[in-house]
Length: 74
Image (cartoon, rainbow, N blue to C red; front, top):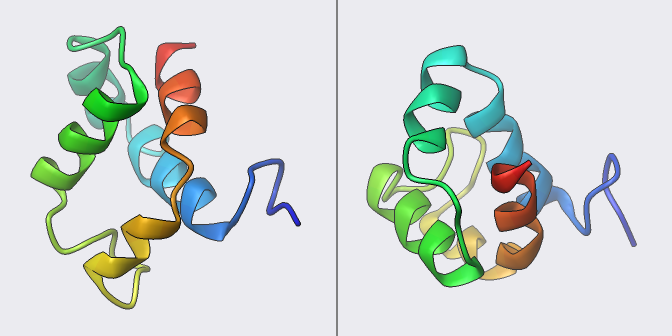
């Protein structure tokens, strides 16, 4: 199942929060390129409680970090 072109809601939501704001975009672009592991560490460090739309930080467990890394590296 997919969500707005992403593997699932959680993956889409992480990409949405980081791509929806120009300052955030420029901030993380400074750290590119990302791997799945490095993007997960980066996102969890900068949003430790999850995105504002997550029920809990455990929602990060459902994120496809490879897809997020691809998105961040575009």
